[in-house]
Image: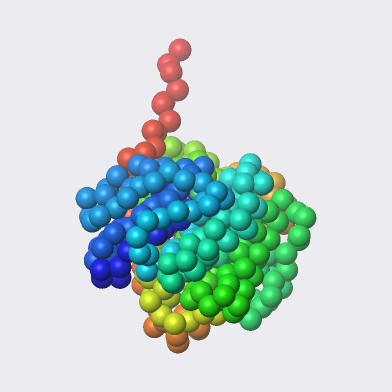
Length: 322
Ligand code: NAD
Ligand code: UDP
């Protein structure tokens, strides 16, 4: 990325802000973050600004995007991403995944830039094939509560591929699996900030369903490295980027408890509708084509994540003595 001018759509979010930082550390000439701040926060970029030349612009990418000067890469990270966020923002999620993605592609086309679409393992829905390889087409409920995200992301892949095929835009598609780390929003409802916050406050872990559903958690630094390698490659087909170490949600609660050195009991809550039962990436394609695989073990990533959240969590006050 040395000397390149890069636009990051959704640069003030969890992954977008890590990406901006990595691009500047790699010597990008300038990074422009365009973000509506609907689920992101410019504080995420406060420690990124000193790293290099960063422009922070508040802009909703469902409105047309104008950038002066040359652009070498456009990364589209913009979308509500947690199940709670996209349940609360269903229309916004559909619009950013469709109109917003096309606006990003138009910008890449105008500038002759590479366009990287942040897609998701959710395009596989509640998968009937395990682990998930890129040639699996998925099992998505098109009208369920998660569909606003899943179908927007499926459309995002379709329009990205079409701009590549028919309009000559150089496109990349990253299918991102569950990723965690510092700068997640404490209250975004995803399981990592939920359990980490609960551990730090001394509260019980809220396990949805019986906790036997599985996920595979990738540390943000590893994920960003995969995205940068994909952008720099010439691979136009979708690539799974995630950590193949699969565990149940009960095992994940245990891992958080261990990393924190203690923690609450488990309380069981209802399983949300259409919650995928199992998820694990097959990363053969990323290994072969990008020479990428995750390096950070969960135990280490959780320690760094806990250190970050310790600064933002207020421990629960002890009960007042009567
Ligand atoms: P996030 O909510 O922290 O970041 C998304 C950012 O996009 C936010 O800053 C938000 O304000 C911005 N945004 C949303 N709508 C916008 C609009 N219309 N115009 C401009 N900006 C807008 O979420 P995240 O976890 O950082 O996810 C980043 C991307 O990665 C998303 O596209 C998400 O679908 C994808 N992804 C993330 C994960 C994960 O585990 N974190 C997994 C799969 C895919
Ligand atoms: N989950 C949970 N307790 C919580 C939040 C989530 O048990 O407080 C479960 C959720 O039902 C899902 C898994 O953890 O099975 C991962 O949820 P998350 O929202 O992090 O991501 P996604 O469902 O999109 O993979």
